[in-house]
Image (cartoon, helix red, strand yellow):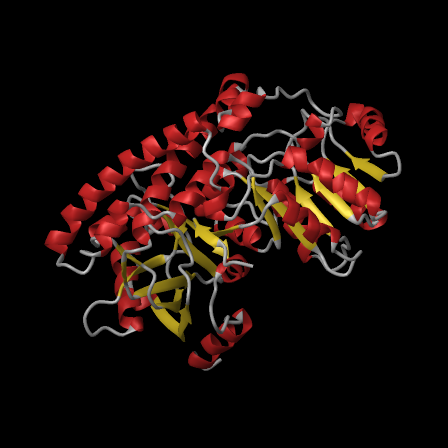
Length: 479
């Protein structure tokens, strides 16, 4: 299998509908757990803003692209474009020459990509031959999953939908799949769990696999129901606004007490089966042209902001990523700053452009003859305005292959198209000052996160054990 193409830190699949069905048919009952996700642009934008969501998506071993927009972005990453290719020949020139050339070529590529999107819609371009990937709609593939489940005599559970139409849903499905062993766990579509909206109190920057059941208590009951029923196939239909659907599936995946063969997130698929809330389906010509988003924009007003954000941000960041692929490598130091409660400090940078809002650690380049500790402390003092006498590097810097968090476009431009893709050294720093970050942060938003979530996001060769870190602190202090 070919190496997946990466966008926003998420590995994009290269598979066709036939290949995906064959892989699922070869799965053995309860031999191991498998996760199936259908990506569309909103998924990747959330991954850029929420590192835990990115890791959740990357843990899936069965994935597909559900949407023409994301398929275009994938093609753009494969087909780099003449402007980024031209920039690759001048990328090592001095900053005074490189930066204006980069900005000019970036503007040109932005215009090219606008026309590329328009032509793909008008001409109904199929990118499969170039990307080795096929657009697979989750709401259509659900019938293939149910057919396979019936063939393999898998016990099937559909989680989500309208509580008042369980029998209707069952009858509709059993007409097509009479031998399917089917059970349902549902909630009313007006319930908090089923609302396809990002609620202010549940901002997706803080939602993750570990706390999703605390935020949505109904999921404790759903999880117990799954433990009791022991289904082979779990189809989770909770809507995609907050990421709770994928976080809950990941919660099941990481719980050794929960057994299943395959779990998949399918959004409103249960509605299209006829048993849930009424859904308005776009005409075939809009679906084939990649204009289904326009139908949703008109018919679902509450999704308009999300749709516009997805369209613009996907186009913008796809263009930027084309240049990042040829950008200069930059040695970077990343600082994990914890307070006395062993909570990790992250910063949410304020930037001018949509999508450029990922959580990031305090980080920056290693200047001159600085070692990683010196560079780390300097960056913390400059960025976070924390008192140097209250900072202590208590673990030797670790080496990481990958950028732990989203990269700022502003930083990318200021550095003259330098991207943090070289060696990254991670400092572990204790701060003994004020426990509340906003008291020490100027004109920026910041937040404390539990250390377990942060370490779960890192791709470090020797992943540090937090207990080991605590022991080192005690040894340094003579405790």
